[in-house]
Length: 549
Image (tube, rainbow, N blue to C red; front, side, top):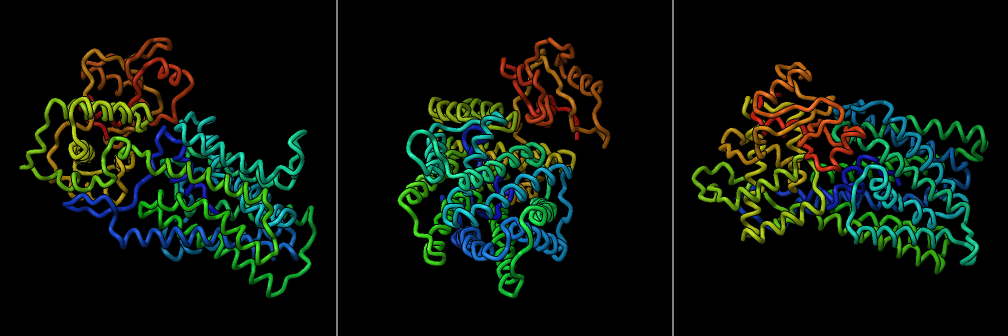
């Protein structure tokens, strides 16, 4: 209990994103060698942080059950959420970290309603009336719902094996909730409430995904959504449940333990693991949360698991394992047959004397396909398979595709540094490309630091030929001299480089230029489905050598 939407955007929701899940691999230091595993110390730190987060979420069900013996469930939930949010925000102030959410306040209110009010309210009702073990199993189906909704609402895709994991996990939830004969359907109402809370969490995550995928302060967002949602739960409790029957030192100790050890600290541990590039490691342990919940509720609360609960637990955990297992194995760099650690080729990118920097026609052909695949800053399973087949056809080895991917990333950094500085938009784009190639933010920063020593190879983007027709999908985010590019300026720059700009509603264009794929309108999405190539605007400007910030 207590995970944040940001954690899911970095891990759980990416199960369903862009075909193969684009999880950031474990952090690896820059090196002149290419080990297949991270340094043990970094791996241990990530493991400890991840285990601490998972244990905190799992152990909190028992003390929550003790608390609701004397506190109404909504009051307990609201107090926990409010205290946890306050702890997070106080910590931010003490550490001099960003205090405001860094995104629209509507995002905070949406998350407060779905993830603080509905999820926690439903969970504590489940603990009070259905049991801690049952609630721990059903509540932790939320990542499955996130992935399903990402496919249905955001147009993302998943592999067949991931769909199988979804089906197994959700069927396990049905097994736990089912209380009657096979027919007619008869579901336990308390179980339905808890599942409804998990669905609400997923709805909130998907509803704000587009708004905070490229911005926002994760800890501040979590803190503010709790600060807003907690009092709402307390107010609902006062209106509909009545007052707590006891307010002694035992209850105060329980609520502080639950809020700090069960919410604030696990979230902090989880976020620290993510910051170290450990999303895939931590996400693979999510399945331990319901296991810890059931096994601790058994001796501490006398909740002996029924056969049905054991079966449901096994199915939910099995489904989560299948889904997260695919998330770690299907990243673009693994799918291309490239080791997760690209730092060797990146670190060697500044070696001008390296004969490997002399690109053959086969090298350029493979990189051109990679470049076009990443034009929209996404990658799907079909594109990964195409890169695999092409490498095999061209006779490119695993080591060579690794080196080419490193050169590709280094070239992007060199392009961004042509004017001597990296803008916020350029840095965000570089981090996105790095993530798609399996690099952490730290690796991208190190590339930027050595950027002026890297020779520009001209392989980051395939140049558009003269006569290409292009349509701009406004609004764009680019600037020239600090001033936003106007439609007239964009058209003039494109035409100066031999392109034809389409402005009529029904005119056909070879290329769609957008700030981000999520900003496409319905007509532009239709145009893309009909074969138009989508390019994010920074890629487009590079492709025509335009001097745009």
